[in-house]
Image (cartoon, rainbow, N blue to C red):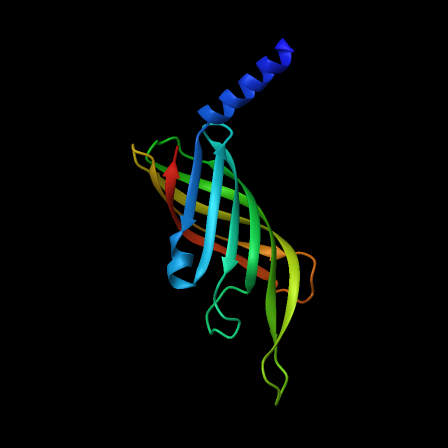
Length: 166
């Protein structure tokens, strides 16, 4: 029983003392009517894992929108610099999403076909972290959808996140 209690205590202490971030992609929210929230957990000083959840509120018929209706994106980041304020990073991600593809048929109204697909990709960016924990990260990258013939071939991953590190 003492070993289980010790392991549980160490586990809770590790989680509570670890550096974590919660972020909102403000660019998607303001420009594209899309909510994209991320959580990031630091494994070490230069490596972190995270997950993003995206939901698109824009109408399918809008001229400028993401193809994805919803998406979950786990990612792994490696930080190339050790500066505590500005850090450059590279990221590998695996996106799992659903969306609608517009089908063009002459003389017919717009027809949308639903798809589900997964993508592998990379992105690069920079992150600013203030002493109080406020953060801004800017990133851009691209992925390739792997399975569905109905999904777009390329998947963009861009954003300007604002959030808090605790």
